[in-house]
Image (cartoon, rainbow, N blue to C red):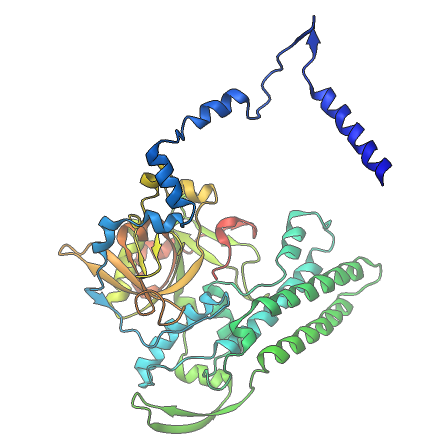
Length: 477
């Protein structure tokens, strides 16, 4: 081993020697600047930190504290206000726990609110997220395996195949998944299929499912490439693989009921009926929805407005619909949201939730934190620049339920029902100023009746297909 180290040392010296400046006449010739940090640059940079008494005092504070804690804008503390001129009455707050199912909780909270009001159900009534999540994972597994079959002629390092194997399954999603899954599998009450450890804490089972699917995907590619393999043989093998996935899901989440008996209670907790249901008949009675009349609009300033876009593979069900949306400026989106709230209808809403969020108050405002003053610099990118440089994007879905309007009908602030439990934020809600709404809101799903005819007509245009790996379209978690 000593010989090996000596050899490596000699090699390092030879490399270093080759990098040294060449000598001419006993003097070292200056080398052209190659982009690295030079001594002169370092000297110039150090001037920005002079080591003055104020610098030292600030450093002593900052090395032991979070910048967010120190940048909290004291002057903005009085801006928090929980009054709203228009609010949809919200029921009990839900909790997605340590899972990425915000998209599911948000979509089902929209339906839950309607069901509670229409059928006089208890305020804490919920549809089973565990039930729908079981089928979400099974359908996503099928989506991946079928996509592997569809793309088997492409090399493994093609962008599409690479993306598939990087993202075989996950617990994130968006509203199209809610619609397709419910239309296909129906709904059940939460007490018929309750949460389990693995539905509340999805990381372990998601990792195992992804590992198994990658293994299965490689086998399907090899099988599809063999001469003489028929489509029927591929489908039979895929079904066997999905049987293993089904078993993994049933062991960790429980098996979804095909039929059940449920006691309906009224708002006072009194039993009013006891009936047998299938998941589809329960859905038909308590939450039947025509999802074809729901439309997603989005504010993405990096792309042309008034165009419809569709994202490849961004669906939960292979035989379902890709995520599709109309891109609009904020001045078109806000009035539609206001109209929905005024009509007591909540909306699926997503945003970049972590930006300028005061977690203690559940308050989001662009002036919550003054990082510029803390560091003596500026953070001046606009929304378009932040999106195009990956500094911002939609990260979390919640239920938009309130707006506060001034005397002229202009929005001052908004409120969403969150799914992080009732102890988070403002009693389970998050409040955002209109300035924050404009900067960090990205998507909202609206019922057709709240969309003006001229905008609704735009949604019939042929969509522009975007690749699945576009960073703007990561699933909400």
